[in-house]
Length: 182
Image (cartoon, rainbow, N blue to C red; front, side):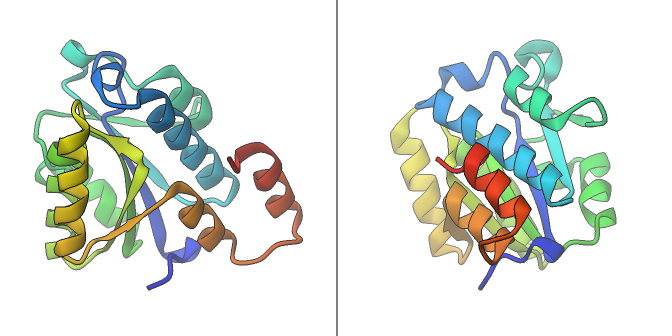
C-alpha cells in the first residue's frame, strides 16, 4: 500500500533529552525525526509529538523542536501506548487521517505498543525503521520483525518522503531534495 500525503499524519514518539541519547544510533534517529517534521511542515501534513514523563526524561530534543517551530504542541504521557492516553487518542482521531507514520523511541516499547493498537483500531500504520531505536539494537530488530509479522508496514525515511512527494520537478521537490534527502 502506498503512503499518501493527503491521508497521512506523523507521530513522533518520545525523542527526548534524557531518553534518546541512551539508545542505539541516537544521531540518526534525531536527524531523521527532525527531517520528517520539516518535510511534514512543508507538505502540510499534520503531526503529533509525544513526551514520556517529561519531568523525568526531559523535553523533546532541540533538533525536533526547531524543525517543529513555535506553533508545535507536545503531548505528555505516562502510558507506553499513545493510544491509551486520552488526549493523544483524541488528537489522532481529530486529525481525520487514516495513515499514521510512526517514528521515535523506544521501538520495542512505546513505538511497538502504539503501532499495534492503532492497527487494531483500523489505521494504516507505518513504522520508520531508520527513525526509531531502542537502548539495545537486538530489541529494535526484534520489534521491527514483530511489527512486520503483525502486518504493520516497516519503511524507511526516504520511502516516506518520496511517497509523499509522488513526483519530481516541483519547487517543493527541489527544496526537499536539497535540504532533507540524505
